[in-house]
Amino acid sequence: MRQPQLLQQLQGRRLEIVREVTSGVPVKTRAVGQSARRFERLREMRLQEYFRRVGEHANEVFLSIDNLKGIIIGGPGPTKYDFEKGDYLNYQLKEKIIDTVDTAYVDEQGVKEIVDKAPEIMRKIRYIEERQIIQQFLYEIGHDTGLATYGEEAVRKALEAGAVKVLLLSESLDIARVKVKCSACSYEEQHAVKSLMLTCFEQGLIGKPCPNCKAPSLSITEKQELIENFAQLAEYANTDIEIISDETEEGQMLKNSFGGIAAILRFKLQEQ
Ligand SMILES: [Zn+2]
Image (cartoon, rainbow, N blue to C red; front, side):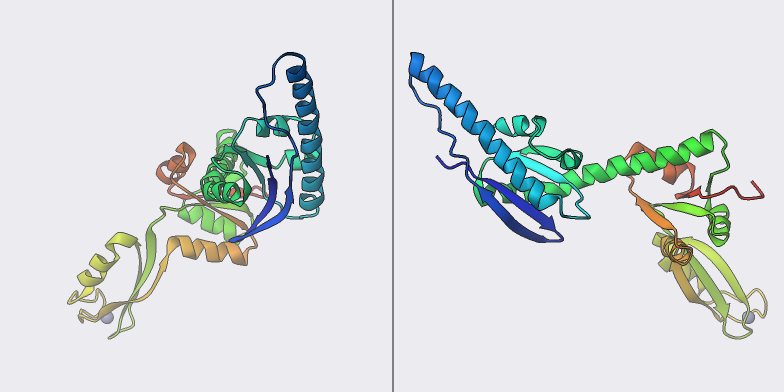
């Protein structure tokens, strides 16, 4: 029976089967006694030799990739765990194993099964990353190191000072910065409006007298989502941006306790 192990590269949306290795491992038989034991030994040897070959191919293919994000091992039986535990893969690659998954099929169809599961796996990994980032922020805050700050104004200042190492933005940061101008007298004011309330806010301006000249000529001249605004500032400052989901407890904390905007700093700021 053929038991191919497919080495595949997942890059962007492209799936490429790089190599296909056949095991040559005999399937279990109904043989009994002496011949059954001999057969079992033979099978074990072949299996190890097969793992070794798969490992060699994987090392050859994957070690040369600079930005390899991770390796997912899959297959129908339990042998994939033996492969994972054994010393078949180069240690650098072993560190990149992000998950081992069961598939119903082998061959290309099995590979497709793994690819289908990959987004879910990548999401899980992303959640772990997000938790680690927030925990680092919480550490700095908790130990009063001066190397973290939060809130719109403080983070904006830190960004402008070039002090932000990592900018943390909650993905649910749904506030827009709005500039309102009077077309009669050029009076201007700024508002922070919940994105969901933006239409409501805009309608509220209709017929509203200008605080300066009393003409009903107020309208929105500029609006920018806060998240975009900060992302832009961070880009100018060459700062890493991490958009944090609400899916973890830490992400909820960022949103609820720190106003959805926080920063880990490169250096302490004077005023803090
Ligand atoms: Zn006016």
